[in-house]
Amino acid sequence: MNKRNILIIALICFTLFEGFLLLNTRQKGQSDINYTKAYQQNNKIFSLVLPSKLDFAGEPMPLNLYYVREGLDRELSINTYWQSSTLIMLKKTNRYFRIMTPILKKYNVPDDFKYLALIESGLTNVVSPAGASGFWQIITETGKRYGLEITDEVDERYNLEKSTEAACKLLQHSYSLFENWTLSAAAYNAGENRIQKEMAGQKSGNYYDLYLNTETSRYIFRILALKLLYEHPTEFGYYIRQKDLYPPIPTYTVTIDTTVPDLVALAKKLDVNYRVFKEFNPWLRKDKLTVATGKKYTLTLPVKGFEDYDKLLPGVENAELIFNDTLTAGKLFK
Picture 1 (cartoon, rainbow, N blue to C red):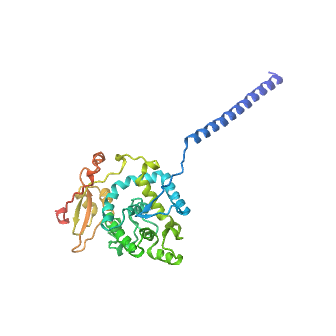
Picture 2: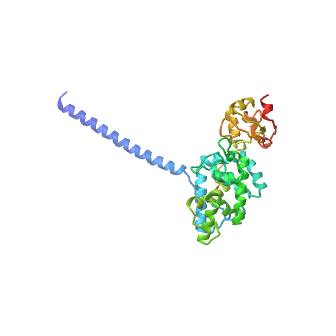
Picture 3: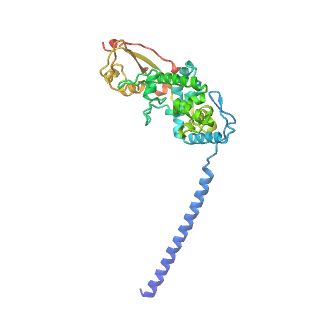
């Protein structure tokens, strides 16, 4: 093949390759255009419609103020579009609110305070950087002040019933100071002394008018955002079937009146694995329990058959029944 033919073939190949690149580029460009159009057509994020009126514990929120309206909009938007976290919290409420609500009522604390626990911990036994623990995020000093036992072996901040009672006592004390539930909730976050200091310094007794640290400024808005999502889930796009909610698990109690050197062995005698034993008694912080003379502790355990999740679901309402069976350690270890 002479040089002339080789040159012609080379030119033809170059032209074909150039055409391929041009076609591919055009197709890619067209593909990006179509993709962008599809994205714009299918990805819909709506701004939320705020309620015309809203209250916390019967105390109205002044939604006519721009900074109040925008504060609520911020927290409602964050929690609405943080779907995974909010969805799990809403599912958990079915198991835990039924325990907390009667205690709030017993202490004459408004029912809206259950949402305070929801934003504090997500109904999970977490520990804050400051050492606040449990569903109600109570610090050691406050817990002891309001009757909780907090030692190396026992930490009742992780006992839902007892920690809810302690939180109620604290809230009642705050209400006796402020005569206002909104300020009492703010004090739960910032501390009573801090709220009193800010009120005196700024010469205002209205939470919504106070200039506070960022966390406390957002606090009531976060509570009310979760209240709206809990009370009107479908309005914000949350469609949760009854069987998707975490069901309450029937329990019975066991009274321990003597020292237990090995809680793993105790769990075995009670015919429950140690994981479940600890999950139902998170206030036990060690693998042993020292019981002083005259002292008693009450363990909570699931009734037999709780492992069959499907059996719990149809009887959600009936499953809240509590079965009590009080035994002494002496009987257990015979």
